[in-house]
Image 1: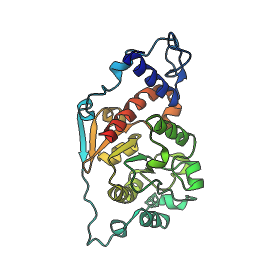
Image 2 (image 1 turned 180 degrees about the vertical axis):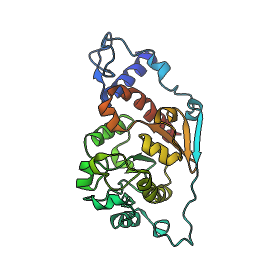
Image 3 (image 1 turned 120 degrees about the vertical axis):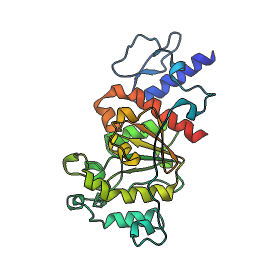
Image 4 (image 1 turned 90 degrees about the vertical axis):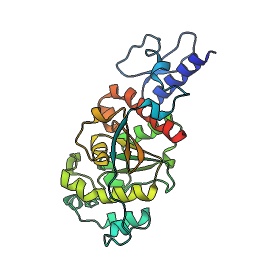
Length: 266
Ligand code: SF4
């Protein structure tokens, strides 16, 4: 089998893992996938090798530089307990008792985030939904299942990733968190990122991207660039909940997470 064909098969199989339908390549017995809404002609998506990052190309060559946000980090002499939190458990305990914003009034559980302290990838979403509020765990509903598939498709078991949100309490009726709620909660997120010091951050959705990059730019304008948060490479992509509503975004999301994977592999 040619290298190009092997690459195409791998690409289509990964597309299938993130939710695309199965496509049978000419001469194959049923590998690969297409995005929902795409053609089921049996032909490949246009030039998958040309869409995929070249194996020889460095990720920094694939994306133009984007924004850089460098908020002040923890101060040893600060009296703020969040700044003084020595580890992720200490942050979670502060979150559990937090009443800094109105979201504390309606929460069932706080959802500080979960994952290993040595995670190389941190995924940041917007805020807990109903299932997360009920369980205290991030990304455990339908969107969470899709995130697990997305991570598996880049050979990254969910258990190796730290997953959290911008706000740690569920906004009522799943509304977007408001500006003052985000401002009240970001010290926890920033301290978590400081303690984790991951190799790559994946911001999923506009709220995460705008918060971590201190910008009002829309998600569409922030994709396809390599941003930095305190010097850490940051990739912006769609939130899994948005993918459930719009399957056409699965392909660009797949492109984004592959970039994140390649940054991890550097
Ligand atoms: S959302 Fe954040 S700031 Fe608001 S109460 Fe919950 S933990 Fe505190």
